[in-house]
Length: 323
Picture 1: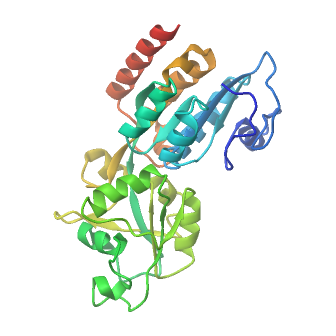
Picture 2: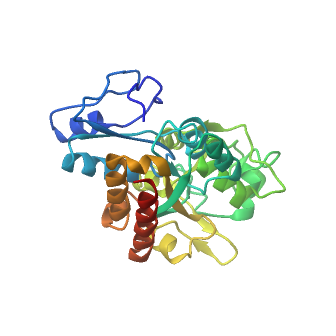
Picture 3: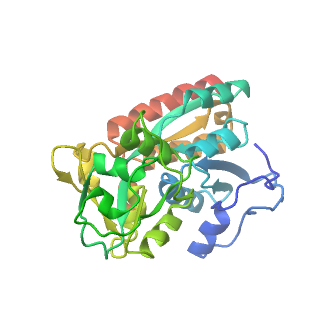
């Protein structure tokens, strides 16, 4: 894995961020820095999903406090951006993803000799949000969401329901490199329509939060964690999939009631990189912590003990192959 960090994407969170937050001495270079690691230092590089980012960030913080000799860098690049630009080219050890790796991404990885190993790290309630001043709406159907977000669909709130305001939508959502975009497009828009492109698209979910906070006629979507950080300044909509309005919560995501927007979250490891003790130690810790309240604390459903044990068995098998 590279020690020249000049290629690392803007917005990364590394041990410098963690140590600054905890008051611990020491740091690692951020974007644009090219300091080589000393012989005593070890490094784990992670890119990918902004949805999974809060889980990885929290686990990395805990890990480096226990293992100060390891530098862990976590960056938000979107699931697809992480796969295509960093993980499959062999530039990162792990890639977080809010949807399964695509066939074309597996092919790209194979071309570069990268074998991805999948691990489930949580469950998300993908959340549709509006401004708290939007007192006319508390629940939407999947058909209404499709009409709002499809190409050639509704332009104004009143286009969806006559009693809603005769005001244009102000829309904020995931960028096309995002796994959240892929999941929303597949689940809400469907195969017969395309996701509209005249909206504010970003890989940074907190940018969506700020956009929705700024306009009473706005709407956005992202992982539940980003709503749970801001429950007083944005409003989550219940979703009616034909069986009544179900609010996004950890409980409804865990039970499967929140359909169809509850989804599994993943991290993928480059199998060859598990020969590096720092990578495999961190990944084992990641898997173990993914089954704890740490995950619910950042707004997602932890994996079950059974899922944890399946992950660990898969990890042990992969490690045995490369060490």
